[in-house]
Length: 489
Image (cartoon, rainbow, N blue to C red; front, side, top):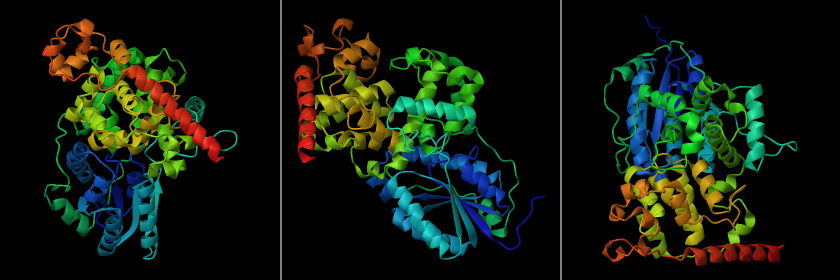
């Protein structure tokens, strides 16, 4: 028989981007408090809109919350979903909720973008005025921010030494998934909440269905295991080819916290214990390397709040004179640039809410270098459409491609979109999947359809820029930005 708490004091576990019961640091601490636990999720549709959160990601979260509600119920924890316009409203609403339900302690896992940090600080002050504790935990990354530092105690700004230090620290102090099996006590309040079978209503956001992505625990963990068993060992050879199912496709689950990075690393090392050894010719290491890139960008965001303010990491690049050309930007957004690999990628994004990683680099390079459009326009477009939208990773990836970030692509290295297509989609299989107009174009011309003798019969645009000319213009724009910076010093 389950114990019932008589005095009706409660603690709250506030879920944000950590929608799981397994390996959830804040949840484990809430359970250890030995008081009835109420789980809370706060929808903030106006804030999501301001942050350009994709509708497909919110639908994914909505579906996942239904699963989470069932999992929490098995732990005697009711899930309550409230809706506020934005973070400011949510602070007041949570504080009021705590007063109404005799909450003595609020537990949550940290979020690192600036607005989220300010929200948590404001709530902490408000709760403290009423004698309510707030405890926040580092949970989103395998290793906590500020733990991977150089000899001067500074955060690494170059990835390779960061990765080497990350591996060294993890090898010395492994961070693995933690579970709890402790029984949660009930109160009359939580018992009544658990008895309410009302479904989770709309989160107040436009709906784009995410049904291609499972939300139940078993299916998610099966995806992770299947990747480790069948794909990880060849990952380094297959990950760059979008027509091949060679990547893990786990990023959407990491983005909403349905899966933890610790679970990924643990499962990988169960199959490949040597993955911690640096070897670029090894698939398991190469995948671990991608997880560490995620950590790198997250740790940078934590240390440098200006990254949350649309600022480039490299100061001189604020003087790059980007072309404000809505026509070119729209052609890129619509997948109508006349460069087949770019167009196929952009159409995949709009249709599925996901894009292959190699294609993210190609399309970002094309927008920022070939079209000389501001990287922030691309960063925003990706966030508005990606089911795996993660601010730190998206910002880091865009600044890498645009040569504005730390340890980014040198500005004079500009992807040739045609050669990229020929290298990574040689027969045009991926292109034909998404650019139906090119279905009958011979392999020889699939990357340059405008050169085909019968190109006049195609309902497909000519290239909107000359790559060779655009490349030189981009390099010159960055050189001029450096000169402006030098003159200011």
